[in-house]
Length: 285
Image (cartoon, rainbow, N blue to C red; front, side, top):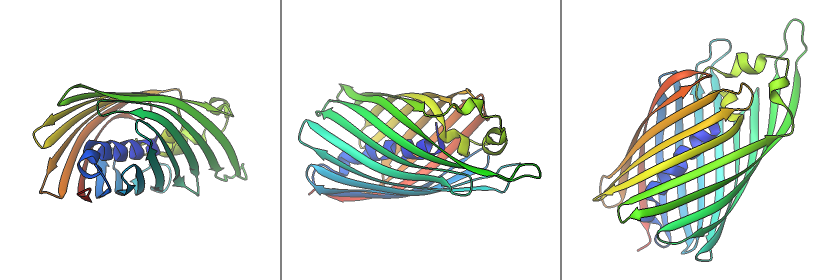
């Protein structure tokens, strides 16, 4: 998964896991937490979702990524996301804008939109995303450095359905088309600088991704298993990932979520990761 997708997917999965608790009507969710991995990567995040009306929700997220890289200074990136969701029941739309990156090396501004059909037991959405990248090739003794820009467009499909009262299944996929062939770039700085962690910059450049989710309600607690695969655009390497999430109430207005996962990547090897989030929610009453 791209490193911004790692954050976005984790944050959205967390919100979906508990959204029904807070957003039955005008409600809100405020959350904060961290994710750490065995490759010395660390992400610290804060998220929120607000029900402006019974059928309109505003969401926001901000996160900071830190990762150790052997051939350059430690990587320090920022992620910010703002989204709006409105439903006409059962049809609705979602739109959002996000920024992610390190403006000294690689960053992107992303625009996305979805058109969905949603009932209490089934939802399906068509997704579109446009990404505007900027990459800075650093100067060397024989190369003066340069800044380059490129774009990517992605289309995908997301669905979720209940198989029984306490069990749900989700499926999603996205395929990207780039306006340049990144694999033909003769300057290997892309691989040398950006490929040492699941939170590294190169993981923001993916060809496609696909996921499946299994959710289980156990009393007031919830379990969720996410499995996925994606292919890198620059190196062509494949990654498989699995994450287990557990959400448990700490009280009437507070939840805590733990997640544990593993990536098996042809690019950066095997990496395990762990996260903890705490959520405060209210309204809707």
